[in-house]
Length: 555
Image (cartoon, rainbow, N blue to C red):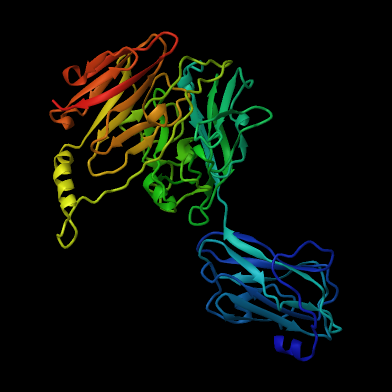
C-alpha cells in the first residue's frame, strides 16, 4: 500500500521526524508510556488538527532490545484501534514497523484523538524512543501531503510509589553531637521544613553541605533559610536538629530498580549522599561502578564517624558523607543489591523508628565541636580543611622475570627485606570519661612508595576530634600509612578547652621491639605508649587543642 501512495503521487511533500517544535499545523504524536518489565505495552499514536485523511504512510522505529512485537506478524497482532479494517502493518525488521492505508474515495474524518495503538508484546526494561522515520506522511484525498509535525515518544520503566514512614528523636537538642544526617528515598521533592515542627532557628535547624570552598576542598555548611530552602531530592540529605522529632510519613515517587538507575549529582569536595533505591548497595560495588577509592562515612552513635561498607536504602532515613576528590559530576548507582530488596538488614541506627539502615564499622573517627551550640547559636564548624583521597601505588621490588636483576635492584631488595617483615599498624583512640570519642590509624608499609590515606570527614558536631595531619596541618586524615623510611606522624587533638583526653594505643604487638613515643609539641612532654599504652593529654584553656608527634623508635 505504501508503494501505491508513491505510484499515484499522492504524497509529494516529505515531512521531517524527531521531536517537533511547537507549531500551529496538524500533528502526529506518539504518546510516551511507562511499563513494567515483562508486561505488554500499548503505545497510542495520536493526530490533531487534520482535515479529511485519504492516505497514511508511517515508519516508526524502536529499540528491539527494549520492546518486541509478538511472533504473529499480521496487522491485528501489531496494531489495534485503527479506524478502518484495511490498514496494513508489517515489521520489516526488528526495530522498525511500517503502517499504511489509502482510500481517496472514502477518506477518514480528521478527528482529534488516538488514530491507532502499537501493540508491543513485551517490555524488557530500560528506555526506548518510539520515533517517526523521515518518510512518514499523512495526505488528504486530493493527493496533497499535510504539512504536519511528527512528535516522537518513548517507553520507560514505570515509576513505583514508595510508602515511607520514618522518624528520628533528639535526646538533647542543645548538644552538637545530637545532630542527625537524614534523607528520604525515591524522588521525594519534599521540603525539609515539612518534616519538622516549630519555628526555624528556635524549634529546629537544618544544614546542607556546600562542599569545596574556592577549590580548597574545605567542608562548607550551608544553613537552610527562607532565601535558600532545603529540599529532599533523589540521593541527597541534610543535617538536622529539632526540639521535636524529625519525621515523614507519606508516599513518594520511586526510581526504577531494574534500569535507568539514578546518577546522584556531586559537587567538588564533601557531599551528603543517600541511596534513593529500595535495596541496599555494597559500597565496593558503587566504588567499582565509578572508579572511586573514597571511604563512605556514616554518623554513628554518640556523635562520631564510622566507615560504612553498605550504602543502605534511605527508606530508613539514612544519609552519608562522601568526598569527591576525583572531580566526578555524578555518582552512578549499580543495579546489584547486596541483600534483601527492602531496607537494610544491618543493625538499626539509634533513634530510628523505621527499619533504618546502617553498617557500624568497628573503628570510628570522632570529629570536632568545642561546645554545645544550642538552638540559637551556630554549630561549631571545625577547622574546615579535610583533604586527600586514598592513593595506592604498588612498587615492584622483585627481580625481572628472567631473573636478571641489576646490582642496584639486588641492593634495594637487601635493604628493604627487613622492613617488609616489620610493617605495622597502630590505632590511637581518644577517650573522654572512659568512652571512645575519636580514633586514627597509623602505620608503615614497605611495599608502597607513597602514603595511603583516608580523608577525615568534617568535624561539625563532635565533642572531640583526633586527626593525623599533613604538612602544615592540612590535609587531615583518619588513616595514614607511610612507606618505609618515612618519619614520624603529626597528630592534632581538639576538644573542650581545659578537659583531659586519654589517648589509648592498640596494636602494640605489631610493632615488635619498636617503642612508640608521643610528644606534646608545645610542652615537650613525652609519653611512652609501650610502657603505659595510654597517655592523658590536658587541652589548654582557651585553645582546646594540642599538636602531637608520634615517633616509633627502634629499641
